[in-house]
Figure 1 (cartoon, rainbow, N blue to C red):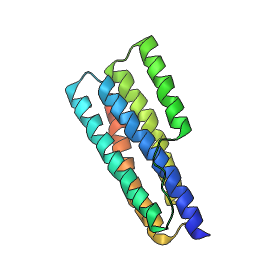
Figure 2: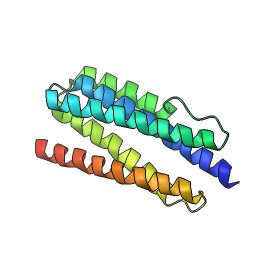
Figure 3: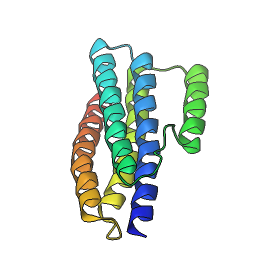
Length: 148
């Protein structure tokens, strides 16, 4: 039962992490500032690496990991693209959109890190990754407040 719970939670985090990686790729494409482009591209790579670590953990349970974004993430991407085309995209708007995504992934990892039904090693992995995600969230939040 614990293994099924772990696979379910990890697969949910994989989807969210892939959503985040895709969002960062879009943000890098939409930003005009070269430093933001670089930051967002680097973050996209880190989130893809995180998804790969989580996928490996799912495989350790003998299960098949998620390989794609969530349906909600895909819908959000379409909405953000349409909104960007209609309203235009500036760096401040791109950073605001990134912060919204960071709020979401931070919440998901924080909740999972507290899940007492997960095996200890899975909770420890999630807690470690949550620390990194929280720090990256806080950095984007500071960046947003500097721009506004």
